[in-house]
Length: 114
Image (tube, rainbow, N blue to C red; front, side, top):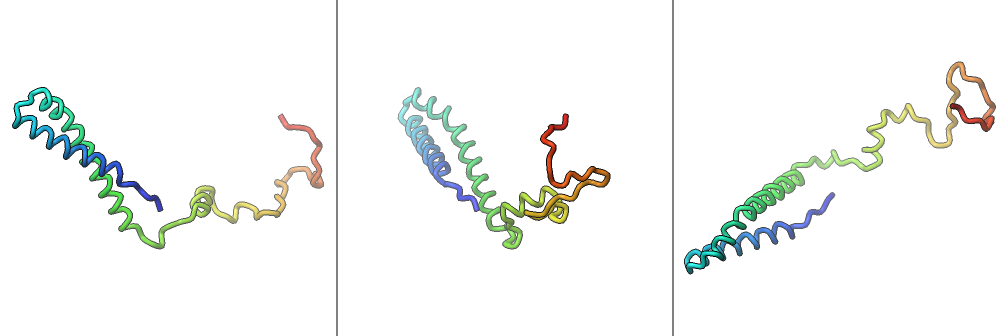
């Protein structure tokens, strides 16, 4: 299971709240330039905060709605994409020559086919 850090969410939420407090204070104290700068940075921080909140909620929902029997191992997931296991020979089994192919007796001529 993947562990996702909550640090970005905490950092962005702290920056957003701090920027909102600074913007409110600068508007009430007639600090026009500071109000303009903090007001311009507030919407992107708000969008980033909402995005991270939605992403965290989706991850939390996905973690708690996953069926316990549906988890697969990496080997099972990789093997499922290649077809059935019956089509592949087991380790140590020799491959049978194709029908109509000349029998070489297990020896190679050393020549490469073009």
